[in-house]
Amino acid sequence: MYCINCGVKLSDTEKSCPLCGTVPYHPDLVRTEADSLYPKNKYPKTKKVSRIGIMIAVSLIAVLPVIITLLCDLQINGRVSWSAYVIGAVLAGYISFVLPYWFKKPNPVVFVSLFFVMSGLYLLYVNLITNGDWFLSFAFPTTGAFGLIVTAVVTLTYYLKRGRLFIFGGAFILLGGYMPLMELFLSITFGTKFIWWSLYPMIPLTVLGLTLIFLGATPSARESMERKFFL
Ligand SMILES: [Zn+2]
Image (tube, rainbow, N blue to C red; front, side):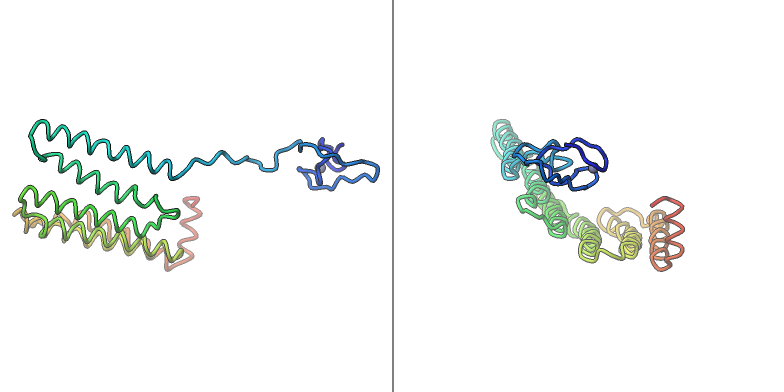
Protein backbone atom coordinates (compact mmCIF):
# COMPACT_ATOMS: atom_id res chain seq x y z
CA MET A 1 0.00 0.00 0.00
CA TYR A 2 1.13 3.51 -0.81
CA CYS A 3 0.32 6.85 0.75
CA ILE A 4 -2.29 8.66 -1.36
CA ASN A 5 -0.76 12.02 -0.46
CA CYS A 6 3.01 11.60 -0.86
CA GLY A 7 3.34 8.18 -2.46
CA VAL A 8 5.66 6.64 0.12
CA LYS A 9 5.42 2.86 0.51
CA LEU A 10 3.54 1.91 3.66
CA SER A 11 3.36 -1.31 5.58
CA ASP A 12 -0.11 -2.86 5.76
CA THR A 13 -0.13 -2.30 9.51
CA GLU A 14 0.66 1.41 9.30
CA LYS A 15 -2.08 3.51 10.92
CA SER A 16 -0.83 6.72 9.32
CA CYS A 17 1.89 7.76 6.84
CA PRO A 18 5.20 8.30 8.70
CA LEU A 19 6.12 11.13 6.34
CA CYS A 20 3.01 13.26 5.96
CA GLY A 21 0.66 11.82 8.55
CA THR A 22 -2.15 11.00 6.07
CA VAL A 23 -4.33 8.14 7.35
CA PRO A 24 -4.37 5.31 4.79
CA TYR A 25 -7.80 3.80 4.70
CA HIS A 26 -9.35 1.40 2.30
CA PRO A 27 -12.51 -0.40 3.39
CA ASP A 28 -11.60 -3.57 1.41
CA LEU A 29 -8.07 -3.84 2.73
CA VAL A 30 -7.60 -6.33 5.54
CA ARG A 31 -4.97 -5.13 8.02
CA THR A 32 -2.56 -7.89 8.92
CA GLU A 33 -0.18 -7.99 11.84
CA ALA A 34 3.29 -7.42 10.42
CA ASP A 35 6.42 -5.53 11.31
CA SER A 36 6.29 -1.86 10.51
CA LEU A 37 8.38 -0.79 7.49
CA TYR A 38 9.84 2.11 9.45
CA PRO A 39 11.20 2.15 12.97
CA LYS A 40 8.99 4.01 15.45
CA ASN A 41 11.85 6.16 16.74
CA LYS A 42 14.14 8.14 14.50
CA TYR A 43 17.07 7.12 16.68
CA PRO A 44 16.44 3.78 18.31
CA LYS A 45 17.59 3.72 21.91
CA THR A 46 21.00 2.20 22.47
CA LYS A 47 21.32 -0.43 25.11
CA LYS A 48 21.66 1.12 28.56
CA VAL A 49 24.84 0.35 30.45
CA SER A 50 24.55 -0.21 34.14
CA ARG A 51 25.50 2.93 36.06
CA ILE A 52 26.30 0.97 39.20
CA GLY A 53 28.60 -1.32 37.16
CA ILE A 54 30.57 1.66 35.85
CA MET A 55 30.74 3.12 39.37
CA ILE A 56 32.14 -0.10 40.78
CA ALA A 57 34.72 -0.31 37.95
CA VAL A 58 35.81 3.32 38.49
CA SER A 59 36.04 2.72 42.25
CA LEU A 60 38.24 -0.33 41.71
CA ILE A 61 40.46 1.71 39.36
CA ALA A 62 40.78 4.32 42.13
CA VAL A 63 41.70 1.71 44.74
CA LEU A 64 44.44 0.19 42.56
CA PRO A 65 47.00 3.08 42.72
CA VAL A 66 46.40 3.34 46.48
CA ILE A 67 47.30 -0.30 47.01
CA ILE A 68 50.29 -0.18 44.64
CA THR A 69 51.81 2.99 46.15
CA LEU A 70 51.18 1.75 49.66
CA LEU A 71 52.91 -1.58 48.91
CA CYS A 72 55.87 0.12 47.20
CA ASP A 73 56.25 2.63 50.02
CA LEU A 74 56.12 -0.10 52.67
CA GLN A 75 58.63 -2.22 50.72
CA ILE A 76 61.09 0.65 50.24
CA ASN A 77 60.72 2.65 53.46
CA GLY A 78 59.15 0.12 55.79
CA ARG A 79 56.52 2.69 56.78
CA VAL A 80 53.95 5.05 55.25
CA SER A 81 55.93 8.03 53.93
CA TRP A 82 55.35 9.56 50.48
CA SER A 83 52.43 7.27 49.72
CA ALA A 84 50.42 9.40 52.14
CA TYR A 85 50.29 12.21 49.53
CA VAL A 86 49.07 9.85 46.82
CA ILE A 87 46.47 8.23 49.07
CA GLY A 88 45.23 11.63 50.28
CA ALA A 89 45.00 12.95 46.71
CA VAL A 90 43.17 9.86 45.41
CA LEU A 91 40.76 10.00 48.35
CA ALA A 92 40.09 13.72 47.89
CA GLY A 93 39.66 13.26 44.12
CA TYR A 94 37.38 10.26 44.59
CA ILE A 95 35.12 12.03 47.07
CA SER A 96 34.83 15.18 44.97
CA PHE A 97 34.62 13.70 41.44
CA VAL A 98 33.35 10.12 41.70
CA LEU A 99 31.18 10.03 44.82
CA PRO A 100 28.49 12.39 43.39
CA TYR A 101 27.83 9.97 40.51
CA TRP A 102 26.69 7.28 42.91
CA PHE A 103 23.55 9.38 43.12
CA LYS A 104 21.02 9.38 40.27
CA LYS A 105 20.91 13.15 39.86
CA PRO A 106 24.08 14.66 41.30
CA ASN A 107 23.46 18.20 42.50
CA PRO A 108 26.33 20.40 41.22
CA VAL A 109 26.06 22.64 44.30
CA VAL A 110 26.85 19.68 46.53
CA PHE A 111 29.81 18.36 44.59
CA VAL A 112 31.39 21.74 43.80
CA SER A 113 31.39 22.68 47.48
CA LEU A 114 32.53 19.14 48.34
CA PHE A 115 35.44 19.58 45.92
CA PHE A 116 36.64 22.72 47.72
CA VAL A 117 36.19 21.18 51.17
CA MET A 118 38.20 18.13 50.06
CA SER A 119 40.92 20.32 48.48
CA GLY A 120 41.13 22.29 51.72
CA LEU A 121 41.37 19.12 53.81
CA TYR A 122 44.05 17.70 51.52
CA LEU A 123 46.13 20.88 51.78
CA LEU A 124 45.71 20.80 55.56
CA TYR A 125 46.85 17.19 55.55
CA VAL A 126 49.95 17.96 53.46
CA ASN A 127 50.64 20.96 55.70
CA LEU A 128 50.45 18.77 58.82
CA ILE A 129 52.62 15.92 57.56
CA THR A 130 55.26 18.35 56.28
CA ASN A 131 55.09 20.48 59.44
CA GLY A 132 54.37 23.52 57.26
CA ASP A 133 52.91 26.74 58.57
CA TRP A 134 51.28 27.95 55.38
CA PHE A 135 47.84 26.44 55.78
CA LEU A 136 46.07 28.87 58.11
CA SER A 137 47.55 32.06 56.68
CA PHE A 138 47.55 31.14 53.00
CA ALA A 139 45.94 27.92 51.77
CA PHE A 140 42.83 28.18 53.93
CA PRO A 141 41.85 31.80 53.16
CA THR A 142 42.69 31.62 49.45
CA THR A 143 41.07 28.23 48.76
CA GLY A 144 38.15 29.19 50.99
CA ALA A 145 37.48 32.54 49.28
CA PHE A 146 37.80 31.04 45.81
CA GLY A 147 35.59 28.11 46.82
CA LEU A 148 32.92 30.47 48.16
CA ILE A 149 32.86 32.49 44.92
CA VAL A 150 32.64 29.40 42.67
CA THR A 151 30.04 27.71 44.89
CA ALA A 152 27.95 30.90 44.94
CA VAL A 153 28.03 31.10 41.11
CA VAL A 154 27.09 27.42 40.73
CA THR A 155 24.29 27.70 43.33
CA LEU A 156 22.80 30.85 41.80
CA THR A 157 22.95 29.62 38.18
CA TYR A 158 21.57 26.21 39.20
CA TYR A 159 18.56 27.51 41.12
CA LEU A 160 17.79 30.85 39.49
CA LYS A 161 18.01 29.94 35.75
CA ARG A 162 17.91 33.67 35.00
CA GLY A 163 20.14 36.68 35.48
CA ARG A 164 23.28 34.81 34.40
CA LEU A 165 24.93 38.05 33.26
CA PHE A 166 24.53 39.57 36.74
CA ILE A 167 25.79 36.41 38.44
CA PHE A 168 28.89 36.11 36.24
CA GLY A 169 29.46 39.87 36.33
CA GLY A 170 29.39 39.83 40.11
CA ALA A 171 31.67 36.79 40.21
CA PHE A 172 34.29 38.48 38.00
CA ILE A 173 34.27 41.57 40.22
CA LEU A 174 34.68 39.39 43.32
CA LEU A 175 37.53 37.49 41.63
CA GLY A 176 39.17 40.83 40.88
CA GLY A 177 38.88 41.81 44.55
CA TYR A 178 40.24 38.39 45.48
CA MET A 179 43.55 39.11 43.70
CA PRO A 180 45.00 41.69 46.18
CA LEU A 181 43.71 39.47 48.99
CA MET A 182 45.76 36.59 47.62
CA GLU A 183 48.81 38.83 47.29
CA LEU A 184 48.32 39.93 50.90
CA PHE A 185 48.17 36.35 52.19
CA LEU A 186 51.22 35.46 50.08
CA SER A 187 53.21 38.30 51.62
CA ILE A 188 52.08 37.42 55.16
CA THR A 189 52.93 33.74 54.75
CA PHE A 190 56.03 33.72 52.56
CA GLY A 191 57.35 37.23 53.22
CA THR A 192 57.04 38.31 49.56
CA LYS A 193 56.76 42.02 48.91
CA PHE A 194 53.31 43.55 48.55
CA ILE A 195 53.81 45.43 45.28
CA TRP A 196 50.24 45.43 43.96
CA TRP A 197 50.94 43.08 41.03
CA SER A 198 47.42 41.92 41.82
CA LEU A 199 46.11 45.09 40.14
CA TYR A 200 47.00 43.68 36.71
CA PRO A 201 44.54 40.80 36.89
CA MET A 202 42.17 42.82 39.07
CA ILE A 203 41.53 45.66 36.59
CA PRO A 204 40.49 43.54 33.55
CA LEU A 205 38.39 41.24 35.80
CA THR A 206 36.53 44.25 37.23
CA VAL A 207 36.01 45.77 33.77
CA LEU A 208 34.71 42.43 32.44
CA GLY A 209 32.38 42.07 35.42
CA LEU A 210 31.00 45.61 35.05
CA THR A 211 30.50 45.04 31.29
CA LEU A 212 28.46 41.89 31.93
CA ILE A 213 26.32 43.70 34.52
CA PHE A 214 25.85 46.61 32.11
CA LEU A 215 24.75 44.18 29.38
CA GLY A 216 22.38 42.50 31.83
CA ALA A 217 20.82 45.83 32.81
CA THR A 218 20.37 47.20 29.27
CA PRO A 219 18.39 44.81 27.02
CA SER A 220 19.03 46.90 23.88
CA ALA A 221 22.81 46.65 24.28
CA ARG A 222 22.49 42.92 24.97
CA GLU A 223 20.43 42.36 21.81
CA SER A 224 22.91 44.18 19.59
CA MET A 225 25.75 42.15 21.15
CA GLU A 226 23.86 38.92 20.52
CA ARG A 227 23.29 39.91 16.91
CA LYS A 228 26.93 40.89 16.42
CA PHE A 229 28.37 37.69 17.86
CA PHE A 230 25.56 35.32 16.73
CA LEU A 231 24.90 34.23 20.31
ZN1 LIG B 1 2.36 10.39 2.98
